Length: 178
Image 1: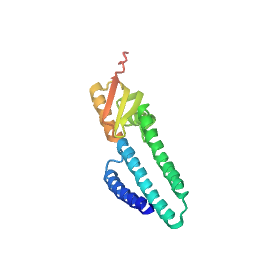
Image 2 (image 1 turned 120 degrees about the vertical axis):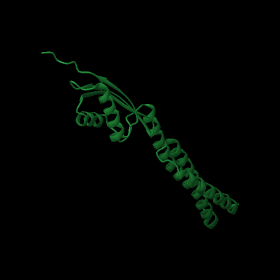
Image 3 (image 1 turned 60 degrees about the vertical axis):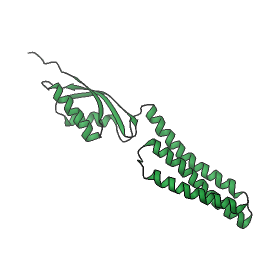
């Protein structure tokens, strides 16, 4: 019986190593890919644990090793599952993407774009790990060309923050009359 368990576990390990190799070559920034990778890693660890348990049971007869290793594998899988759920929840609640801050966007645009008098109402979120969206309002400085400023803001968001989907509302500053 132990040799049958060992043979099936080794076959499972080989299949899981192949699947892990295929998935590991994929886009690590993709949440679905990471979740699939964690799933296969869990199966792979389960195969390793089954092989280890079979070897221990065959050599010593000590049966508790199987549930002990199973619990250890379950805890490792739990860590990966929690990470995937956290990332998913952050996207679902439209949280600001990791590595991006509203203050950095505001400060950069107000500092780097001479025609941007003030940047307000910034909202940044992600549809997935690689598609960040931003909406914001920019108050144009006196005499600024609104369309040029809109193009400059979009170019700066793309260049500095790698954001390629945005909605930019430009408000003109009324010209003062003497």
